[in-house]
Every structure is written in C-alpha cells, then in structure tokens.
Length: 200
Image (tube, rainbow, N blue to C red):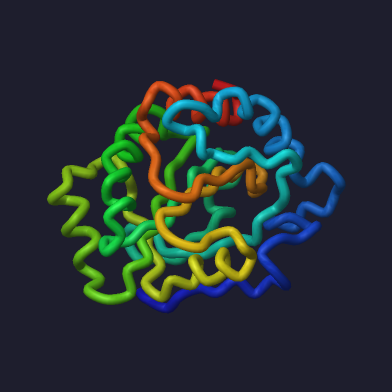
C-alpha cells in the first residue's frame, strides 16, 4: 500500500497528452473551458491564473482512499481540482472546509476535487485530522512519498503548499492557484461551475 508511483514520462508535459492523444486537439476541451474563466477569476479567486493555452499534464500518480494506485487518468471525462496539502501546512488546513463544501456542492460525474495529502510521516495523522475537522465529502487521496509534489516542482508548477491545479476532462492544465483560497465563496462556486465540462 505504499509504494509511490513515479511519473516516468519524459517531463511533466508532453505533446502526446497524458493518455496517448496524439492529435492536435489534445487540449481542445480544456481550451474551451479556459475561455470561459478569465473574467470569473476575481474576488476570493483573484489569484487564480488561467492558462491562455492549456497544455497536457503527465499522468500524475497517487493513491486512492483504500491505498490502490490512481492517477489523473482515473478521472478522465471530469474536471479535476488537484490540490496538494499536508497536515503541517496551516494554510492547507485553513482551506479544507471550503474544498469540502465545494465537493459537496459540485462533486459528481463532471467534477472531482482530488486533494492529495503528501505527509511522509505519521501516516495516520491526515485521516485523523480530517475526521476531527469534520471534512466528510472529500475522498482521501495521498502520496506518502510526495512524488507528485516533486514531479510538479521539477516542472516549475509548485514551490510550496497549498498549490491547486485545475485540470480539464482531457488531462490538460487549465489554471493554477498558489496559496490558499476560499473555494466555496460565490466567486469560487461561479468559477468552478464554469469549469465543468458542460459549462455549468
């Protein structure tokens, strides 16, 4: 249950896309979503940066709630809010209730929050903290070797925690927010609704 899964692709981004889509429209779905978002990145989400030209992400790997291997491709067809967090990160914990509310509001066939815990010690602590904090709607995803953090760091996508990437249903990066946010604010809900594959 524990072996970390390391991305073996030659770099985090690739022209083939994360699931072998080699045509020129590898990020067409994400590009369409990105066009809807710039004017919505305001207020509580003003720090959210939308990609002008979404690009494919490698098939980043982590573990599911029962310890089985998962990856971004496990969510194909859904918009994913990929959040990296740890229990030693106070801003991470500050935004967890809002992420939980956002998942309760929008989670389903078209949207999932994959909040991936990267604690590397005291591996029972993250689940315990989530229970104590009343976080009930977020599924528990983890990478106890923090490989996902290192992969994103090498690509210049993450420097610290929390970091949140918005990934389209085709596996392409639509946008990013470094730092914590009030994701369940009116601005957060409006932006995420517009990011659904159906456009809300």
